[in-house]
Length: 160
Image (cartoon, rainbow, N blue to C red; front, top):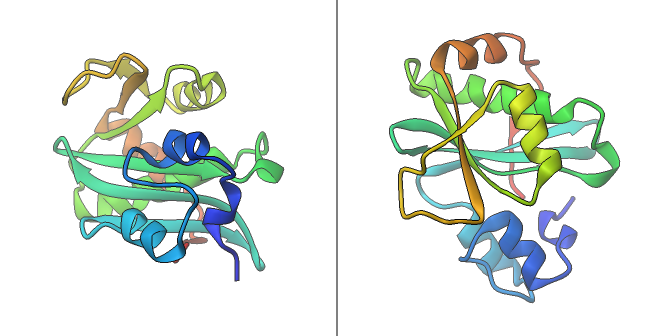
């Protein structure tokens, strides 16, 4: 069984990915409590027994909010970010069919920003307390539907 927390080797890495609620060194129980919040659903993208990517959806800002997106390093630059986001949107649209999508991304994460822009996300004003180090990006409902329609069916509910 794979363990998502084994991918993070410092407090900065885990906070950069998961936010302020995580502490380092990681303890499995605390990691799972922080990761699997009651109003958040986790999904994984797998091939055979290999974890390719991880992401979450939640109800935030009256949008399908994507959180804690991660394509594992060996699988980056192979189109899996698109597959992951499309699958997450597909899941989110089942619950909230008329909503647009949103996500936060660090401004210094140029690879992720470029990936989200290629999918149609655009930076806009932050709906909550402003953080100078983050972009808040949104994708209109019509674009969510188009992306979700192209999603493969192999994104699974996951336990990290």
